[in-house]
Length: 579
Image 1 (cartoon, rainbow, N blue to C red):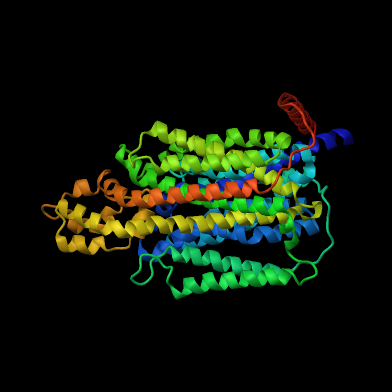
Image 2 (cartoon, rainbow, N blue to C red; image 1 turned 60 degrees about the vertical axis):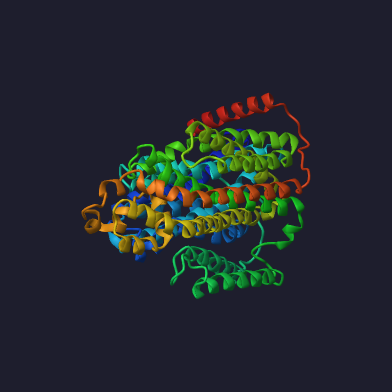
């Protein structure tokens, strides 16, 4: 192949491969949100039993925690040893652990532990991919085309998290192992493709690894994120665990270690992360805007899933077993919005600068979230779908310009660690967001659910003494049940109470009693959560505007850009066939 053709086509090879990698990782980060009920049934484990709550949380959040902790370190390693090498290694690691997850043979707690450990391994591979993909794209594309390229990659990063919901709903009812196995063919192909076709063309730096800084950062972030995970579980007589000595020690200790990390980075010769990058207003404000968007977006998925699976779908005739699949289907407008606006926003940002589009995207997201907040619990779906589409369009409008602005603000030899920091902000914010919004909704349930549950049970013939005892159980179980698409009433009452004379057992375990019971208490927390998410978007919009202008100096018409892009894609296809 002539060198000129290789040089011309390489940027599209790099974009295609890294977009597949990013899409695969983000799909796997969210695919379990819908697939968890089928996984727990497949391994014969009841996630609502008090002793099993930690399995539920770690399977759900362990992947995000690992990628959050490692992505900056792996970005720095890529800057030193080569981004393509580390990226390809990440693809291979991710694929191996996907295979190991798909061959889970155990059952019960041992199977849950196996899945948790293998998901951690997947997260290691995902961190390598996340940390280096944006840097590889930035190295491959000229400055006036990076917005479009990073826009496509950014749509894969954010849109994949919503596409995972749909795939989880489609694959898990057929066979729960398919949610892990689906990544394997793509992983094998793309690992080989990356090994043979990608090459490092970025600037390497000669430096030693900052082991002290890496360890301090990992311990501090693990402490904070672990505290968040265990803060969601009941402690003593409290609804949640935020007063637990272990949780407080993890949160406070982790924060102290992170402060120590900042001090360490100021005094080592080759720091893990160059803190002077935060002197760049574009870099700092872009990261803060991304943090606010991730805080709003991370909890959004959970709120919508609980709303659909626990309330709306059962009230519209769907059995609890079918709600995970249909929740993914009914959230398609959100994914469509991302895939429409992301590449277009990146292209426009290349021409006019990122600030107006990123800022407008966050403002639009906040307004759409306020619209969702105003909906009744049993909403008309066309209006719900329209608001989801607006959220997707708006967040897509923000993601690509913000990412390209942050990456363009970095010196060439810091793109790996700088891109890793952006991903750390976003992934950590997702874990924090889950804890934050779960807490808001749980506190809302705690204040209103006991009275509603007692009144509802006694009205259906349950003895007052039994209803009183059941009504004071932790509301977190009801929240998890709604999230998993499980009707907990049968488990709470048991066969003995349900078959007693005068108890309307069929109605209590039917599709309408539990959704109607929690809709009022859940609605209070839901509206507060949407309102706070909107506020976070508006704060992010302020940060986005404060980044300053960064308009590209190169101007082409959109038609010219599209024509050239299609021509280049055709060249890539022909060259790959020839290869």
